[in-house]
Structure formats: structure tokens, C-alpha cells
Length: 67
Image (cartoon, rainbow, N blue to C red; front, side, top):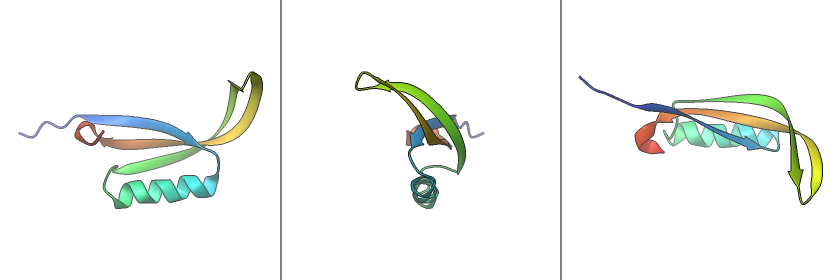
């Protein structure tokens, strides 16, 4: 019996084209079985200023041994 531990890795990036490119590289390199891309609205502080930005969240489904 094979026992695999799976994980979900999350990261964000600033453009749809970069998100697509990164997702393709991850899957082609077999670092993730699947990458889901979601458009999100982020609110955060950066350099003492409140920012509101459109970002792209990548949800990377992978094995714990690859992280």
C-alpha cells in the first residue's frame, strides 16, 4: 500500500499572463499535478500605504515530498 501525503500550496502573482506561464511551468516540470488560478482582490499595507490590487492566486496541488 502506497501512502502519499498531499499538500495545497498558495501564492499570488500580479498578472493573468504570468499566472498562466507559471502554472504551465509547474505542471510541465511535474512539481504539481494541477494549478488552479483565481482572480482575487487584495487589500494590504506596502511601504506604509494601504493598497488595493487585483491579483491572481495560484492553488498548486502537489505531493508533500516535492515541497
